[in-house]
Image 1 (cartoon, one colour):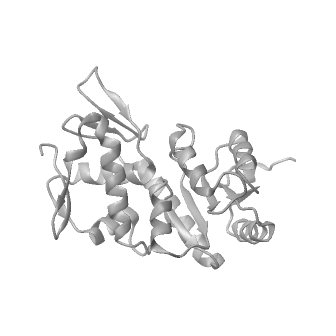
Image 2 (cartoon, helix red, strand yellow):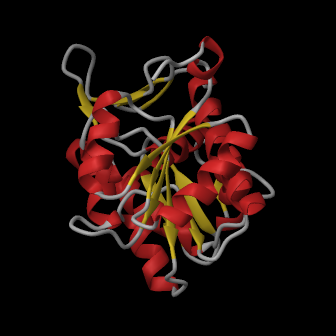
Length: 241
């Protein structure tokens, strides 16, 4: 199939869902919004699509034949080629614990079925907007931590002895914000506004999930104590805890 030069410039979104009707409905909405949708009915087809070309974002169904959406999300977050690709989970599970489970697996946002095309597109644009802002952020250092804004990578250690840390996209944004605003206490709602962006509905408990994941990512550098809990107020980052 030939792809026009205009299509090649579109943002490619991989839809991973075993229900053809859902894939068709989502793909129709994406095309109308100027995106390039790619279909996959299970984990095997999703891996083949990714091998063909890394998508700009993945819409991932929770329940899939074979590997579940959660298993795929964890796998992609471990893979250097896909760990920074934003993932939005499509799920019929509305319970809080299930949503938190998805966030802990590495997804950036979730949409509960049934959803409207308008809501889905709003969340896609919000996640992509945050991703673009990451690319525009500069480099910053704090203590033995260094963020290379151009390369979108995080390093720890003394010059010449640095090791790279593995962070998901949300943890990267959270760390970058903390490092550029050290020694100040931020409430969960303030972090949601600053890191997730105003106007996007995300529960405050989401912040706690990503703080735990950020601390775990910083553990190999013994830097997890830089992210401090201020009881009753929120969180603070300190290069000299």
